[in-house]
Length: 512
Image (cartoon, rainbow, N blue to C red; front, side):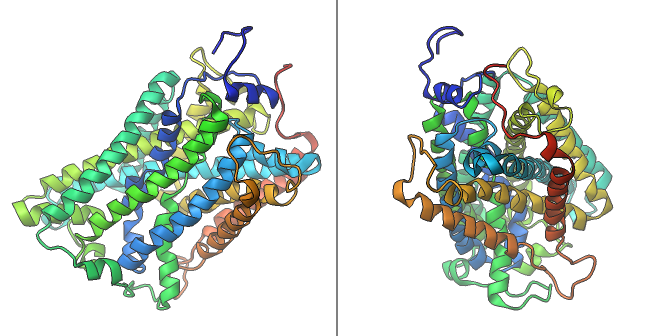
């Protein structure tokens, strides 16, 4: 690309210019790097490992193995709709910018306000849950390394887990303060690690295990024994879907990285679709490999096993212990997962900071000029540290109650998917006639695919708000609707009482 004043040949740069923004971030990422960020945030190793307990408890192998494909298929449909819009509007604001463009002049400010806050809070919740799950996994690794729960292993307190969480976020903020060329390297390393890690584990664990499940068990066993008073099979299956749907989020990263990606109007959409597609295939392999090593579900979920009820950790540990008399190999395998989760959180902070940068560029956040600052390496450094700080504060809820923390995490799935669905909804309604597609488009199927996406998000928003245990008490109530509803109320009220007077939606800055 030519220097300023020269002629720019990059299609993404030209499109950004058309949309009224000047190139402030360094455009240095290839399509592989763009894919790598989304693939590392989807991170099959992170999502599946963290929520495998949920899958085992609600439906077991059937809900894990088939639920993955159901959630995966609909996720791909949502991804296709997003990719089509991304091709037309390749800016780092991503979703909220799309909403403004698609909702038309009258609704643009409110549409982008609503989408933007759901997107940014959803992203912060993703970073929180990813890094907190890493802190929890470190606690389990320490527990197993010191002899396990039944041999007086050391169990870190919740305060120590929060300290781990803070330290991990600090590292992520430092890495994200480096120039984009370093980040690009880490992003590709993260994608490679996730990819290779999955293949190693899915082959190694069933190979080492002395007891393996039969194919009949893996493909047909339906676990109805969840101890939570949920007996309806369909209901159980739906609750088991959460594992898959939680894992398959975060691919909006490809859109947030478009201002740093070459030929972003083509490569941004490619990043979104390839990251989902490859994650579905690789993830299924990982799920099958691990599930073939599952023989006793109640024992794996029992809080008195060596891993303290962390199912995948116990599977890894037992596989090696049963064959070699020592679970060290299993602990090393958990280390492989831990590194993948670390990279996932790192990429997540990258995506958060680009969203905060763009949102404050348009004046939507308190102290916007401060968060929008870019350092000499063209990195939005203040937005990076803001994202790490907010994610630390969000995890503090875990000290009060794990129920409150789970509500935060639910914003990561539902809040983020609502932000995904809003621009698609405007695309199939208000902009049905006016939408001008970019080089990647779905042609006449755009509207149909868009409606399926919107309906799927509506369905999962209801499903994941259902109670997960009966009878319903303070401890068992599902606070998802409270958290997501609270976010909606705050966003709408702040709009009515304040933002509608001054927020005009995305502001172009070329003449600035």
